[in-house]
Length: 88
Image (cartoon, rainbow, N blue to C red):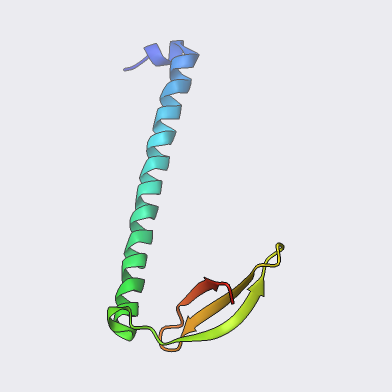
């Protein structure tokens, strides 16, 4: 068996760090894959509702930031996608 890692506490610590990083990396990879799949599904549904990005934009609301810059928030009637336009 591997008794050499039990004799050296620093080596044991490093091996545990490597194992923890491998688990974290795998979780991170699975999470990224899941988010990418969801993003692709959202784009697919948007394409069904508004083909070729032909949105029907309407002014939804107006916002101002701390500098006093006005921003108009536009929303598509069909897919409810929002975008910001500056300079009202």
